[in-house]
Length: 256
Image (cartoon, rainbow, N blue to C red; front, side, top):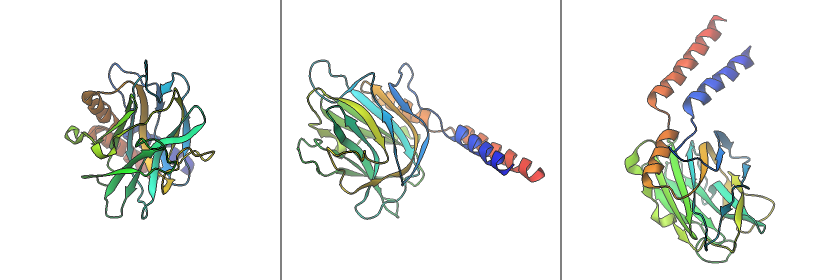
């Protein structure tokens, strides 16, 4: 009986407090749902068809990775908790990626980098970093990683406050280009351990909750980013329903 109540409780809380994000009139090419990463292991998402180009030239399609994260675990010293890296064809492993540093006092620094992120070739090229002001523990943070003609633009929005949507200038990069290769795998929370094209400096397995992830073929407008982020954050009424469900379960359990 105890197991049954715990299962129902998980269903009520998970179903009411997490939603798939969406953009009206657009379908994502790849999606990943609600996942909790506890800092000990990650997982992967296969990216095969349609193809996602990581090159420049005629016909190269821009793309945007959109993801909402929350409940980030604190990191130690110079450690960078990995959010994701990606692999491409031609056996490039962990080509580029994003991570974060979060101090006990709540200071959040986002990190972006990769093998060729700053136009260099060093396999251990450093992260580009930017501190994000106004972040509080547990708050939803929606990130947008846009690749367009060899340039990366990263934007972020805090919770459901559309006024916080901003392009994180210090994290943008150029030179992220290779000869006709396409993405074939996304690595969440931990890098691909089978090989290294780029080794994330001080990269450790990230501890965070992935509320939703979508990869769109195309560069999103600011209005589309806001729509996506708002759809990813539960309305207060929905959260209240989740708490109501929890209360009903506890009452039933007590009566039983």
